[in-house]
Length: 304
Ligand SMILES: Nc1ncnc2c1ncn2[C@@H]1O[C@H](COP(=O)(O)OP(=O)(O)O)[C@@H](O)[C@H]1O
Ligand SMILES: O=P(O)(O)OC[C@H]1O[C@](O)(COP(=O)(O)O)[C@@H](O)[C@@H]1O
Image (cartoon, rainbow, N blue to C red; front, top):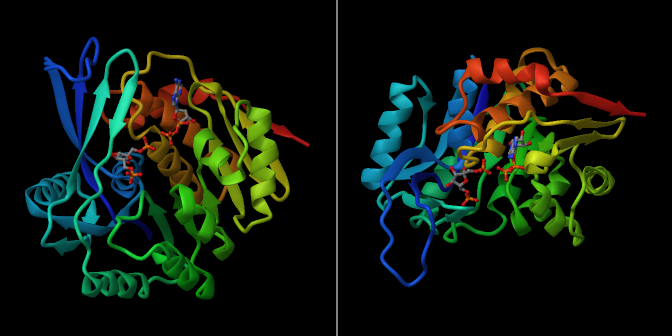
């Protein structure tokens, strides 16, 4: 079974405006809200692509209840732990460019941290764990490392999709896959990543720090997958970007849904890119139809 873990889920409140004027009243005539948070998005896209998963993490308050109901409606298994605090609402402003404002999230008491550690303690090597998103400020900085250490000890493959110190410090527990975007990879290696070639070069460097595969996305420029014995480049389909929030998460889900079925890394890469673009070209997350429509437009080239 695939387990996704979102320590800090959100409701994503998307507002469209012609222009954002700071310090003034702005009115939007087009708003929408969706459940969000990286692991939650991965679970939602997996379901759409025909793969089951269990959502782990924390939910609380009226926003948490909304996400619970949404997951139930979509038939996604949910073992998220109930918190007293209120799950955050992240603001996504869509004007001439996309601006995101992500909140810090509710307090997670130590007792609830232990509960999650014990849930992960039940996983076996037949499972896959996806650790995705930022660490809430109330959990120790090595929280992902603790979960990852358990995975390494028990041969549980895990995917890590986070940034900053949480990413850098957890690499040594050998995640099966990490999916930095160009900025996250740049921060990790201390060099700005501008091209696919940069991504391949520095992605290879990061392999020395522990992960088995590094999947780097560079928005509309393309994506790169590197492993010990593979370097592959993918083109992305052309289209109108409607809402790129969740594109990276959809990429992880697209990748995993193929990999978990037959272990084909290159096909997983191709579907990951198609799913990312399908979400970027949609209002909410991608549908399976949209992913299938885009698959033929993703060209994967393996570099010897
Ligand atoms: N402008 C775009 N055109 C086509 N596909 C895109 C575009 N922006 C994002 N995507 C798709 O979404 C994936 C992830 O996007 P990216 O913005 O790099 O990641 P993140 O959402 O993690 O920041 C890309 O690899 C691509 O498949
Ligand atoms: O945990 P973080 O880093 O604050 O990110 C949470 C945000 O990222 C998202 O999961 C989207 O992530 P991507 O655009 O990278 O796929 C949103 O749903 C959510 O608001």
